[in-house]
Image 1 (cartoon, one colour):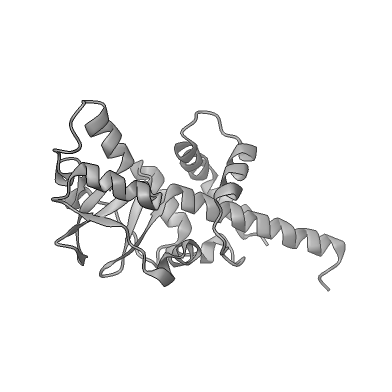
Image 2: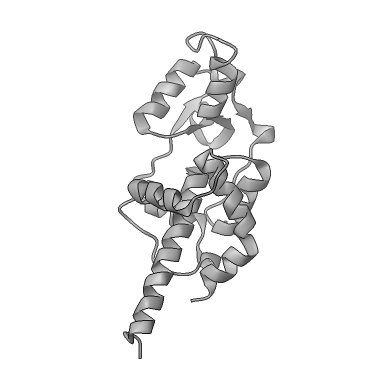
Length: 205
């Protein structure tokens, strides 16, 4: 029962910062956050197990990516316009960039933020610009594995100021966002509160 409390005490500042990045607002509001996350929450939730025991693998399973094998990607030679259409079609904010479509060879990552900053703001034509011209390249790419703890993933994303991280286990197996991490933490907190209420009512003997 103390897992959430301990985690929030140790990592509360990082969680707050991660949430603010996700919400893209300067004012933190749990009510707004929870309402937004509940409206976006996946059909499969992570069983209550304590944050110290939750890994990226559990997040992928909750997203459905582990079972469906859904990895959204593009090639470095693709046009930015095509990549953005792919993001829009699958309602994702980033694509893994692969070398020759090989899941074992990461070339980088391209995000909606790259599109906004490097295409929209300078007025570059997305129909004439290659993904390789705006992506974050392999030597600067941050990844996690499916075995990475959720709190460690949050720490990495907060420290590096990134919103999307590819999950790499000798090959690309998925992608997580800061929203996925925050959603999992809030879900675990809700489950712990429900268990505490049951305990108070005497449902536990």
